[in-house]
Amino acid sequence: MNDRMIGLLYVLTSIILESVGQISLKHAAERNSAGRNVARMLLAAARDKWLVGGIACFILNFISWTLALQRLDVSLAFQLSSLTFIAVAVSSRIWLTEQIAGYRWIGLMCIFLGNILVGSS
Amino acid sequence: MNSRMFLEHKNRKILLGVWIGIGLTIALDTAIQLSWKSAVGNVPSSASAWDTIMLMLRQPLCYATITLFLFQFVNWMTLLSKADLSFIQPLTALSLVSVTGFSYLLLHEHISLQRIAGMVLILAGVWFISMTRHKTTLDAPNR
Image 1 (cartoon, each protein chain N blue to C red):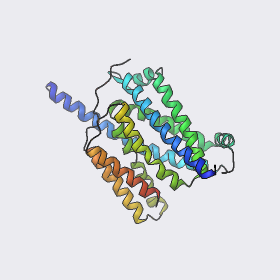
Image 2: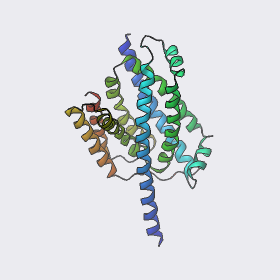
Image 3: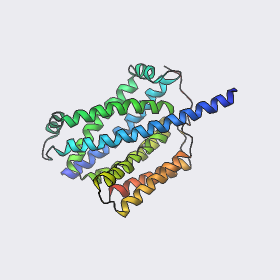
Image 4: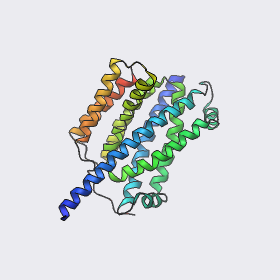
């Protein structure tokens, strides 16, 4: 397996870790925020397994992305990372039951394509 | 002020707070991208995974990046408690626009037509998303 393939696998890993991490943090924020200010919410969330899991995902994401950037052109890695927007939205729909319809999907596609254009320029 | 007006006022305040939080996210994200890339640039591509991590940990820029991440984390958790993930996460693409603007204004870098087209698409996407409700789920009870 050459460097480029390994780099692509690190990017894919990064996308998955970002999605899982975001969903975990959202769970932690939602479960600990009702009627609380920001400081109390963070203190309550500090003992939540979702927060710990989310932070772990982001630490692993940091490492994975660093290793990806070492092996791939920044522009290629960046374009591929655009898939994160789609992955997070689909994950939000499935696991958080967020309503994503009409304008939000159009906006998402515009941002996804815009990200690719910027990354490839 | 009756209860309906109170709720509308509260919702407007929350929405304003969400947009302020997104602005802060963009600013922090821009700073993180710049410092992170600078730190990685000092590590040779031939280094092993473990050596890469160890070399990164020896750089002051790595710790600056981590500090910015912590501020970003607090800001992001606050945003997550107020709005949908699928609403706020795509809006972080605005950091691309800010980094490009920063590069053009301060570093006088050339911006290609393709890049401009990409940024216009991103801004259009942000506009479409802003037309949707920032929160489509009910507040969960505290654990």
